[in-house]
Image 1: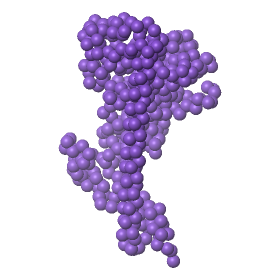
Image 2: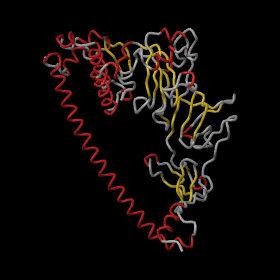
Image 3: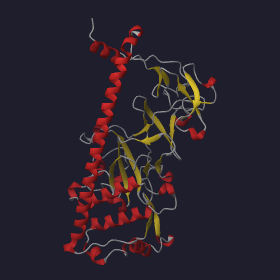
Length: 430
């Protein structure tokens, strides 16, 4: 006879994943390419929020804000799409053919983002971007070009700057920029192993990830199957939308797009005897996990706050003691307004990654000459980058203004570049 403990383990591990009738209509293949849920090629299949395009070729295309890219692979288990990055205009020019569109720009209202698995090589870059990227002669991008790479045109090897970047966080979640005041071309590799020689790298590609979908939308009960009920959207009820919510005893499987049985017992006759025990153990373990997690989060938050304050105090002290003890210059709002001519458009150079840029000589007029004359090149570039960042916070277009999280990460990165040894400069921002 099994012990009570062994019986509980048996019941918990033996999870039944019996699927119910699907409330969604799967999309047909696009040629030989399957179109799994939630991807949708028409309003009548999949989830329309995850729309992709199937052409007559046939080819499956991913739609950015103002351009399309060919989908070469789909992984439903990890919710990933592999797209083919843009080519170059001609072999004699180091310019991506999506430069007129600003590079890859994703719609922030859609459930797609650029994953953290991409390594980006930027080619033909202007000098102002050197502060935020690794554009040294020892960068991976320059190593790639020096290895006589066959993918990038020879003109990229002759271009002034070649920079490396690993996608990470909000700064690269929705865009890989190509612009005339930044870098004119780029190339992407997925899960690149930097230790392998270039000849063993995979073909250029970019990985896009999608969020797990909610239950399907419905207008009436006839739009749902017998295992779900059409009810008001519990997540976005302000839209007055309805969704097919799974009935009692069933759970929504967002990967497969079905309602599944959430029972944890194979022998239904014996489930009654174990229900209370399983419920008690689950509740106790859940409460213990929540309590320990909260304690860990509070401790981590306290530790981070303490370390941040100590680091901030040290950085301020180091700044004040720099240049032989000469006092550091803090810029007031009035000084910035004076240097930019009250943010006049006449002094505007263009729009960069964080918004507008003013003329360098006007911008640097706000810097104390005693600091500017004794500053190193990297310190001057850091001051410019911080000023550009401040300018971006005042952009008229809300979507062009960075969030506080992005500002914090950019400042921390700029400070690490300014204080690091040349050989210790990081490859990626943030």
